[in-house]
Image 1 (cartoon, rainbow over the protein chains, first blue to last red):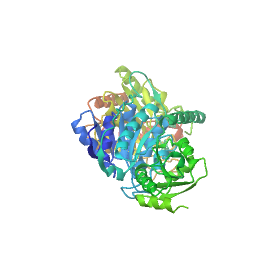
Image 2: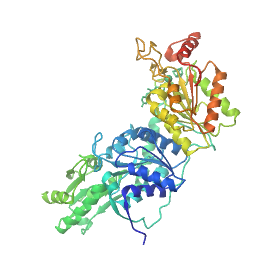
Image 3: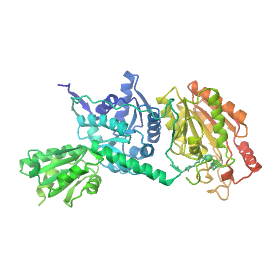
Length: 348
Length: 221
Ligand SMILES: Cc1ncc(C[n+]2csc(CCOP(=O)(O)OP(=O)(O)O)c2C)c(N)n1
Ligand code: SF4
Ligand SMILES: [Mg+2]
């Protein structure tokens, strides 16, 4: 049995990045990800292999990450809200050059400076914030143990498949202190990759003279992304006491709201409701086939999120059946177990 | 891009690049050198020299090379940029790289305009100079980027040369590389020909450059 400790989300993330082999962080303070920066700096005092620079802004942090990655170092950044907006400049370069760019994003209420804790409003920005096709890997954890494992995966996916990869969490989960233990099975780290070194001369572009050349590059990227999707899509189907074929209603939620929805399923089970939870863990690539397989048998879908419909839109985009969808949409506010229970019970 | 991906006839960029390459080759340092390229006519240098190069974004080459150098301290890291990329959109990061004394070498090719986009007003456009966005002449005085850099860093090598003085240009670039090797920031601004945006021919192009030299002080700062 592995040791259990009491950690918060920031501490878990710092530990996961170190275990992932990250050597350098570039960042700019912003709630709720500031403590990742300060936590990393504190670790770097003890471990001389860890480096950090608090940059002049998120734009510089993002491009410094790009530069360090080019030089063959595992580097990352962490940001939130308005910082996620500024980070798009560098992320878009990473999109274009297929850099293994890792960003930890702590969602906060938006638009603008909004609020600082609860939110799931950066889903669109995380996936589609660049001026391209949204070929990014975005993972959403619902508790601290998952936060650790998914962060390790974010690094591994970035380096294995060379798409920018984002851990998308929120201020609430980051501040949550839970009993935490490392996963039982050891996670191997994906090997490093120096894009530029002395061994050979490379001339790397991100701007094209021929329109067709760019198009075929993007088509290839899209194909790579789709092939990769089969290998990495991840989701949870939580049935409570039900069996799969008796399910009538389906709740769809991700991240912290997914954890709440799980409790709602248990509660609804007690009241004999045949309801399950579908929780996408990879928001991008979205577990489309798995959702559709399940949705065929479903009468009602309930999307619950701390946003006015960003997950709802993702579900709609991917759903091939015309099942009725309703839900709870509360940007910047937490979703509670009772609300989900009431919603499902009140549906006729 | 608004035009074919090659430097125009009479452009100053190739002079700067070839001068740099000559130094690297003489020092046997081509392999350890990396030339990060800003977006602007600088991007055209991506396959011009026998060194590692990569394009970045407009105004972002300096923070990118800061990251590169921090990850690979034994490299010679160059940020190659235009005057717009350095002193307008990228000024914040340029000054902070200088302030922190990050050991990278920034080469600013100052042609007094945004050339890649067709010749609009830049932070270095002279007073009364006519550009696409100042059709009746620029109302502002240009900025002296090197004075700003010097104000935040006393150790850096900071100098301005021009493409019609290749000997001096070579000397300054060599000193800038030395500065990087000693662990200091360095910046060389090069006043450079852009006959396309200036709409000049033959000797007019050199005359325009001489006008620029009257506004931008040549020498070490
Ligand atoms: C974020 C962003 N804004 C605007 C542009 C368009 N743009 C491309 S090059 C350029 C100006 C380049 O001027 P300068 O840095 O002086 O380089 P030059 O072309 O003169 O060598 C601009 C505005 C861009 N590529 N990216
Ligand atoms: S537009 Fe000016 S700076 Fe750009 S390649 Fe042509 S001459 Fe050179
Ligand atoms: Mg210019």
